[in-house]
Length: 273
Image (cartoon, rainbow, N blue to C red):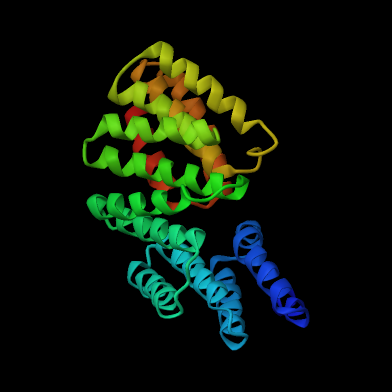
């Protein structure tokens, strides 16, 4: 795996930093579909060590943040917290003044606490993340802010602040419409504030996005859209259509390899029986 990052250290310090940032932000996401979780954790660990030896603390912090993300996604909450704390200590001790890195750290804390079923803490850290990301410009940073708004909506739903949740989702799709956020709005109009016309409108938009070039191979988002639509069909008492749709969802979830979606799929199956 060393060939992914070793060549960048043959160039000047500025080029090293730009190349390392690209690896940790862009390449890390691409490799999710190529490497196993364990291999990707090792890949980030190797970059963290190399950044430490080359005195590039921002890269080291980003690598540990990536590892924290991979670990909470695998239910390893304590290990995730350790790596996020490592990143936080580096940011504090090395006085890293970078709104993207701070925003990224806070959104990973938020996601970790959400998965630990601590939504109030998740909201606290997500709001901090939104504040940092709001200081930035550019497409990459707009994506990060969109993601943070989408996450915050989930946390607000958990504490029954449904209006704030819907507001967060609409803030997200104003920046960059994604299948996930658009289908979550459709879900709002399905299960929280029933409005068939609004649900139909947002589901149509969500399915259009899943077929677009940007999201065609994003199996996680596609699976969520199909699952939300299945639940909508169940509410409409169209059980046969819902079951057919859930079978399609099962295939997509297998491609996404997401454990939480598998559980939600099982719960939806039970509603059709």
